[in-house]
Length: 490
Image 1 (cartoon, rainbow, N blue to C red):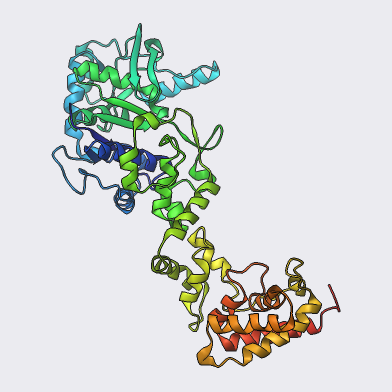
Image 2: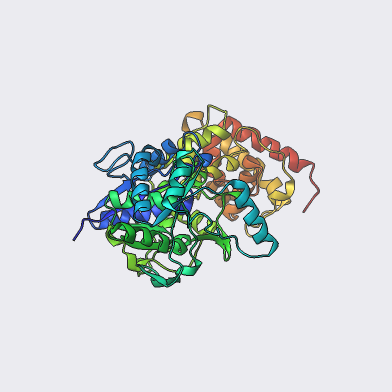
């Protein structure tokens, strides 16, 4: 049995789509599950779409995600080059073989002629199909035109009758009438191959055993198989995976917002959570389990778990999963990740960031949510006194007006050197006990006075610990002033 060899072959067009990353993940998992090789190949033959720096971005993203490839442009291997634009001479050799076999032919049709065919098809409301005008040129005529320097492309000579059947590991056996197959372009006029030709040649020469790609390529697969058959090559195992949709019938698209790995990673989603989530977009372990490390995925992954149905990308589910991953971090890991976000929101230097991390560690789903939650730390926002009303806490403007000054008094008794969460807790809950009221009737107005927000990342005790004695008392002073001019009751 041949050693399993899979490949990920992205185009360097600027960013790595979630669907592309899932393809890379599945190819990686299949190879590792079988103790095989995972290869990276850069398909840059469409120079019009090439984006400077995109290849290096692909390298960084795969390494960041832990999808280490055994062969590739930057790590080498026995089957290079691994960048298609560096393999021109190889493609030329196999194009010439295909022409000599009678399975391809040069086409000299001008852009103007092809545009005219497209216009006629549009006018008659039919699909454009190349009319095979150059297919019947004699070898001599074709050679003469090529020698004279007339620009040309090379097209695949498709059978016009019969059927082509192939097997897919996910979708089963598929049969296509050859009459619907167009004589597609294999080599462009610039000497670079199209995807349809290059991927077949490269997959064969690189000994790829399993081709994992999106189900949108199912209709093109007969073209690839005809090329394999023309050369007498073994056809790899096809594994087509369903598309990732934003909603039923609507693809996940960059134009509609987040669609790439970097979109989510830069917003504070953990790479482990992203990989875990996209692994489950179209694949099931066969159980209700949802959380897997990359190593566990490699152990459990199987083609039989891949679904034919389109996968719906659910941002809320990813957010929830990311929150679960954040809570699993050690305190030290979370604190280190959170510090850059603290610096976005806080200019003060007297804030204890470790206190902040203790507050936020179990309350954060996405790291980029942090700055918005901290907009009260540097400067207390103006707020309406109706925030002091909380029915569940039995708090009102009247009770807040009564208990807030008393809270100021017990907090003012604390020595600056003793200002910590334990002592503050003792003082405020002791006050509530001495007043024979619920803790919330004391704590709620203090929390409002310190944050000026209906929701804050921590309670009164945590916020007082964070802000320090001087700032805490100053904010309670401001709260008492607001309450003193408020209506008698709300």
